[in-house]
Image (cartoon, rainbow, N blue to C red):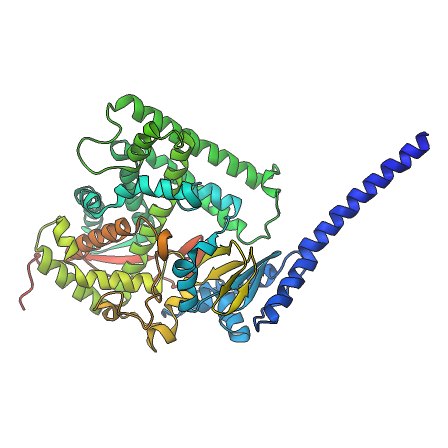
Length: 522
């Protein structure tokens, strides 16, 4: 009897092992081959799938090689930043398959197909699940929510970003920028000019503004959270270079332990901030001044039980990450571009002095009138978009431009490639030419979906007006006080660390304007 039980147990164990092996074989071998065959019959190919790792080895190799040394002073950055796309497009065409481990992604850069994905057939696609480390960093807020919960949160948060509300922030932003420029002026008095690493200064500046927008009068309490998120960002970026293994994040590795600790500290800090706000404020929203994110979320939680403290914490995390990094990157790259192209710096300064005169603080109405500045910022966002690619996943079998896309297929939209496409932007697509936006965004490109730095459709970045307002105001104040050029130590090396960054920083030499500010004579 015992022997029979023993063999029964062995049979059960063997059967379970066989089931697991078969599931692994299906997931890591049979299914990828089936997908390759499905797309091959439609004329879509790509680099061959390798068991378990997909194309990650080639992807990482190309990325490391491309970023191993700086590039010439050129805006043709696609071969460096999206090296895998640039390389495989030449072999397989603009629409091809690429494997991130056993996960397939179909690259889509045709603007007509992109419009289908984000607008006319958007109900068939959803935002894909981010890497767990990335999701931990960006929070489970608007960036990652889906369906009704996303729509509910978006409705609550939208008043924060109404233009009339944002205009109330102009004095706050101007004060922070002026304080920064006063420090630069003091530093330059001895030598007449000063070399500034603008990446660091702009991150501090946008951190200040974003915490004010998120927390209103409690903004000082939010500053430490930005530092913790910066540490999280480095760890999350490392994860992009490795194959995602389900369950690996639960293992007590050194990196995972660091991630857990940082996440706990961020949540604890936000919880304290929320409790303090409840105790110290009779009204959750400020009586005077702009509506802040924390106040709106806390007010919503009173009338809507579905808004929990966890939701408030996650939205704050999302807002911190997206708001700070996007705006500081926009300021950094625009400053680099104006340093590279002094003729446009002169034009921008003339406009600022004409519109704002010698006032240290442009008003909310002045900022709206800075048309040349808008053109420059749009061209900066075109050439150096903070987010170089985005991903959507098919929720069901769907037809896309004549192709049959199976349910679960991820679609990779290379925003950077679209922005540099000569078929959309002309032969000067890799040149800095803000004049292309002189008649507005709609007429700048040969296709209306050629310019998507903040996304497209219902999930367009909710904070884009804040980013543009802050960048305009900061650059206007800088142009009033300084002329600037690239430092001799500057190395042109755009690279991706979650978002598009200058790999070796952005040292810029600022020289105070010697002539008194006045309106130029015309």
